[in-house]
Structures are given as structure tokens and as C-alpha cells.
Length: 253
Image: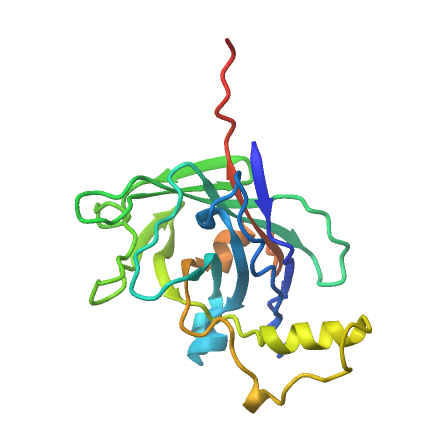
């Protein structure tokens, strides 16, 4: 199996009494090779409490998982998820934020995409593996196929899912890249640090030039109840990482 893994590892302490600062990390663009196309290129992983964005305290019962792929996608051009790959969120439960990182996989959320249908939308299969039990969905709680959102859709398709009695919501489709990176300034600073050019600093935030502005990414967004992730453990702290993998296609002669 070929697998690409994000360098980002986010540990979230979900304690109501603590106002933890936001956590951010990136493995934004690994480039392309003969073995890895753009649709297999991980960019950023974001994980946050829904209430931190909505301002509604009750929404903090949910975590939002965001996996962005296919960096530098041109505006007004449709891009697709790979129909051969598995896009996966991996979750480890932890008793406290100070516990050592184990890499154990207590919960797996896997997204697999089919070829575009006649409308251009891709059907989606969600597989959730939790405590050794596997649940696989191809339809929403209302009985409709789980589908991606097309570039020209008037509104995003928010697939409402029932997974083990818990309500999850899935969006998959193109969105503008939220990553901010002044790439020119970075290489100037890097050259100066290596004595390959004059020593300079980064531009002030108001003057920085966002290299990613105007580019899209293929985004997978999952709203997941913390109760689903915790199971019977009562955990409120989680490590999260992401991978894209392609199962082995070689068969014995």
C-alpha cells in the first residue's frame, strides 16, 4: 500500500473550563511525482471545536475535521478526488493533553470516492472504525446517495449521516485555499539565513503577499460529535492525523 501522511499532528484539549489557544500546523505542498498526482497531495489539517467558530456554546459538543488536498488548483476549474485512494482521519483518545503521543488508532474515519456520475458529482463511501467495530455508509440519513459538491452548485451539499446513532455531517468539494504563505518573503529570508543573499525579515502582516490567494483546494469537512469519538471512554482530548493511501493493486500471478 502506498501511503502519504500529513506532517501535522494536532492535539486538542476539549475542556470547557479552559480557553485553549488555537493550534495550527501545515504540510502544505509536497509537489508531484510519477507516483503521486495532485489529488493525492495533502495540504493542511484543521481540527477545532465547532463552537469556537460559531460562537454557540452548544456547538462545542462537535469537532470539525478538515482535510485539504490538491493544492494550487486553478479557479473556475473542476477538480476531483481520486477514485482509487482512501482519504483518512485517524484519532487517538488521550486522558490528558500531557500524555505521551502513542499513534494508537482508536477511531478511523475513511472517505472513498467513486468516479463522477452523469452530473459530475462523485459518490462517497464513509467507513467509520471505532473500537474494532466497522460501520460503512453510502447513503445519507434521508436515504440519498452521499455526494460531493460541484464547483457550480448554488449551495454546498451537506450530507447528513447517521453513524452508530450519532449525527455526522460531511461536505466534500472545492473551496478557496485558506492557507496564508508569503512565499517570496520566505525564500528571501531563507537565502539570508544561508548567507546566499542579504539578511532580511518577513514583511509586516498587512503587507505580506498571500501566495495561495485565488487558488482552490479539494476539501473534506466532517462535523463529528465528541461523544462519537469518545465512545465509552469519556475522553475529551484527542490526537488527530490524516493520510491518503492507495491499496496495493498487484495480484499474484
